[in-house]
Length: 117
View 1 (cartoon, rainbow, N blue to C red):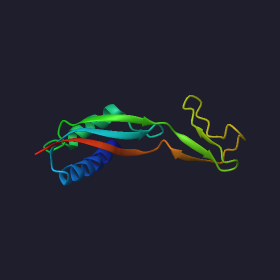
View 2: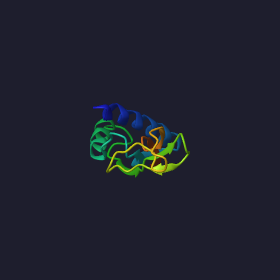
View 3: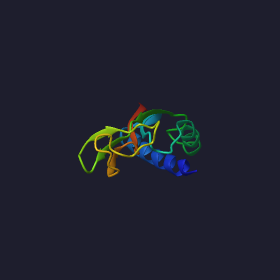
View 4: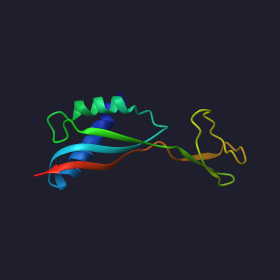
């Protein structure tokens, strides 16, 4: 159910920026979502539809772009793309488990499509 509070925060960001740019209607919201996040695009749209009712973002379409997970080894410095099929969080070069997630957990509003006055 954390999608409800997340989508409420997304709505706040979208409405603020849309109003600052003279929008009367938000039509599309482009989101970057990390593949390691627990966000399910269909549920996000449902929750967004709920929280955006009676706002300038009502009926806005969410366009989701998934971001691959990238990790970096803390021992040898190798940067690599996470393979979601095997869920191995170790360096493919030196096999160290000392890795840091660089991308793949984000939720970012990339762009907003609006209609002006």
